[in-house]
Length: 312
Image (cartoon, rainbow, N blue to C red; front, top):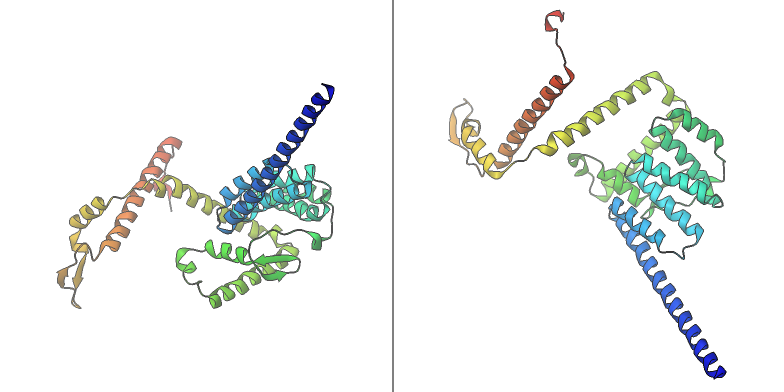
C-alpha cells in the first residue's frame, strides 16, 4: 500500500514538473513573439503601439534583468526620440537608474538623457543637479537599439536608416516628396549630419545660454503652441462635405472661369475640372470663419479692451 502511494506521489510530481516546463516553454515562446512584434511596430513607425507591446513583453516574466533594462531603455528612447514625450521618457530613464543600477553599459547614456529630458522640460536647476550627480562611464559601451543599418556615425553616436527615415517623415509633404530617391536621401543625410555637427559645436560654445537664442527659442515655442492649438480647436473641427463644395461652386461660379489675354471670359469651368481649387478655397474660408469665431469667444471670455484711438 505504501509502495502504491509512493508511486502515485511520484507520478503527480512528474506531472507537475511537465506542466511547469510546458508553461515556461509557452511563456518563453510568447515572450519572443512579443519582442519581435514590438520591434516590427517600431520599424513601421507605430511607436505608441510598440511601447504597449514592449510593456506587455515585460509582464511575461522569466526575463533577465539585463534584458528588462534594455527594453525599458528602448521604451524611454522611443518616447524621447520618436514621440518627443520627455516626461514619459524621463520616467523610464529614472526607472532604469533606480531599478537596474548594475547595468553600467546603459548608465552613462541614461544619465545624459535624464539631463536632456529636464532641459527640454525647461527644468534647468534640476538638469544641473542631475548633471552633477551623473556618473561618467565609457560611452563606447552604451547599447544602442535603433532599427535599420547604420548610415552615419558622429563620434559615439550612430544614425541608422530608421533614424534617417524618421527625420524625413517629419518634413512637410511638399519637401518630403523631394526626398524619395537614394541620391536625395544621401544629400539629406549629409545636411542632417552637418546640422547636428553645427548644433553640437554651438552647444559647446555655450550659445544655448545666449539671450538671443533664449528669446528665439521662446518665440518659436510660442508659435508652435499656437499652431498646435489652432490645429486642435480650429482645423480639427472643420468638416467639409462634397455637397458643401458643390454649393460653394454654384454660388461663386464667376471665380471659376477661363479668360483670354484681355480678361474676357471664354468659358465657365465645370465643377469636375476645378474641384481641387474649390476645395482649397472653401477649406480656407471655413478655417478663417472658425478662427474668427474662436478669437471672438476668447476676447469676450477674457474681457479684452481695445483703445484704438490711442494707437499712433
